[in-house]
Each structure stands twice: as C-alpha cells, then as structure tokens.
Figure (cartoon, rainbow, N blue to C red):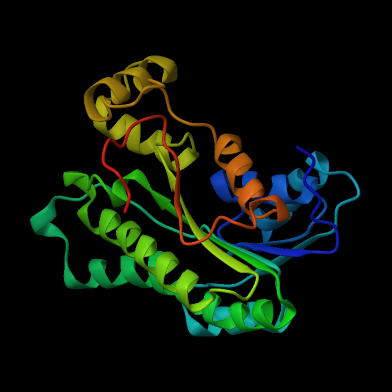
Length: 264
C-alpha cells in the first residue's frame, strides 16, 4: 500500500522519543510536514535529526512547549495554527499503590493524558472540518480495557481517551474528518524498560526480563513480547491516510492479543 501524505501537516505530541518519535518518522516518510512537540529543546532537536535521517528531504518542525497547560497549547498554535493530522501521544505512567494515589496525582494524570488531547482537538478540529479533511488519532492502551491494579490512574485516563475519541468522531460526522483511538499493547520504550525492571528485578538481561514480565504480568499476549514502537507507527500512519477514510469512531487494537474483551 502506497500512502501519500504530501501537502499535509501532521502534529505529533510527545514525539521526542518512543511511540511518538516512531509515529513522527512514519508520517514524515509518507510525505507529511511533521511537527514534533515536547518540553526539551535539546531532545527535540535530536529527535528531529532522527526523523530527518529516516525520511531524507522531509520537512520537520519542532515546537518546545508544555502541552499539559493551556499556555503550552497556545504556544504550539502560534507556531502551527493548522494541522491536517493530529496524533495525541503525550502521556505519562507510573507504578503506584492504589490507595496511595493522591488527589493531586489523579488530577495530574487527567490533565496530562486526557485534557491535553481534548484541548488540541478543540483547537485543530474546526479547521479540519472547514477544509473537509482531517485525521485525529488518540494513542490509548490495553490498560483502558483491562485496568492494571498497579496503574489504576493511568488506566482511567486511557479509558477516558476511548470516550473522547468516540464522542468527537460523532461531532465530526459527515465532515470528512475521522477521529479514532489506537489501543497499544505493552510497547518497548525507554520508560517501559524501567517499568519492567521495577516489576521483575534488574538482575537479568533485557530479553530475559521482557519474557518474564510478559509471562507474569501480561500472560494473555499472543506475541509473548513487547511491541516495538514502529509497529504502532505503521497502524497510525495507515489511519492517517486517505485509505482509512471509512474508519472513524473506532478503537483500533495493536496489542499482541493481550486484550480479550470486545471494544464496543
């Protein structure tokens, strides 16, 4: 399948590393002018270099701002007032004892993982509708459906993103704009490596630690391994394409078979 996003502008939040960086590289390879966002200018420059290496000749823009705040979103909008593709990937996670999660942490997780996405959808969706074409992708997680006891606050935010995606898809019905969520299974990123080692111990090689984590904590996985960020990116690029014009309001899974329940 040949995907051509030439002439389109794609904004990817949280794109200095991990899934966001892989998605940005994939969109750039498809021809999109790609906007990388994050809080650190140095890390963004390094990420932009990696995208340029993966997609020679691509136009890559970086905007350093804190998108968990309205001021940070306004800074992004001043630099990039319109977008054809919006990928809300920004998110945080941590292991926490359920009864020890404070009100402040609950609010922080909601503001970071949910409200940051809602704020940018509100900003970019009207322009997409006026132009009669647009793609909004919210990166969710299998934790949205099978809430992990060690990350209830994280799971809550990913469940909320499913509702946000479905609701905005209905709001954009008939405009040529699609809104979807991507349910990503356990994915191999630097942050997840720390998470895995915290759960299984640091006294073993990575491949062994990964297999033990999947065996003990994600036994439903048909892959038996973590998903690589590029595997998530392939699906996001497709859903951002003209070929995905009939897919909207969906929660599309790339989870290694981990989730057994059916998404309504």
